[in-house]
Amino acid sequence: KLAIKYCFGVSSKNSDIDNCIKTFQDSLAERYGFNDKMIYHLEVEKKDVKKGGEYIQFEIKKFVHII
Image (tube, rainbow, N blue to C red; front, side, top):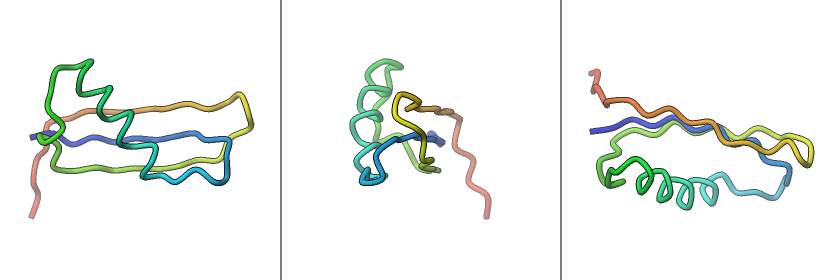
């Protein structure tokens, strides 16, 4: 089970945060050899940036469920 944290720096104010997730997540899963059904927790943030300053930050951890 995995937990993933994303931060998307986007220059378009019209960017939907959920559109950023799926494509990148599929690429990440392929690159690091896991199936995205293993993701049990997501933390996602979107930041407005100037054109040319777009970025994606991510962190993948083992998911630990805390009650």
